[in-house]
Image (cartoon, rainbow, N blue to C red; front, side, top):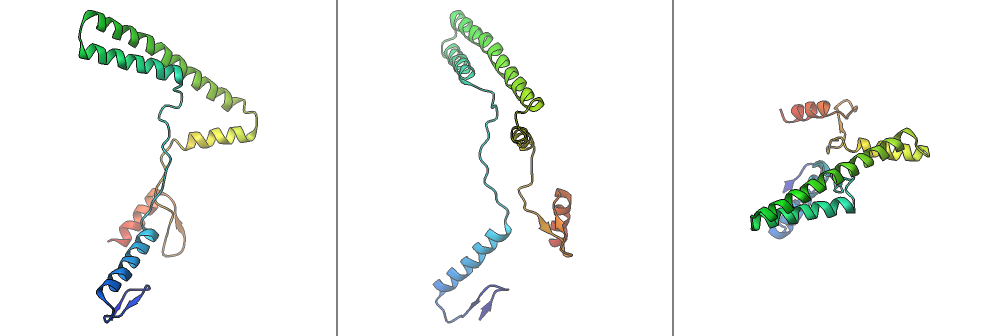
Length: 156
């Protein structure tokens, strides 16, 4: 008879198939319980990009590909022109986006607007994917340092 701690008792007389299923269930439930996981939504890396920015970036890429595929003074001039046109458009759009965020932060229309912005800003910083862990005395380990110490004690 095989006894797995706190889980199930498997009789040797059962078929190997059933034993394998029971052991698989135990392993999967342990993985689900103890392996941290999170599902995050991809965030745009440049939220200030709008249709005008997309258009000038696309035009710049097309001009660059044209220059690389057929190098000539004309294609080089087209690429330089597209590059020089894209730079101020991107800078202006980015600066206006930052100014709008600054205005929203300094003059929020409601507390909800302020907290939405504060939450968006704080979500830009990294956070642990490990859930809070518990010390043997029952206290909670929240910081990365205390979690690392708990792991080192558990696996030492």
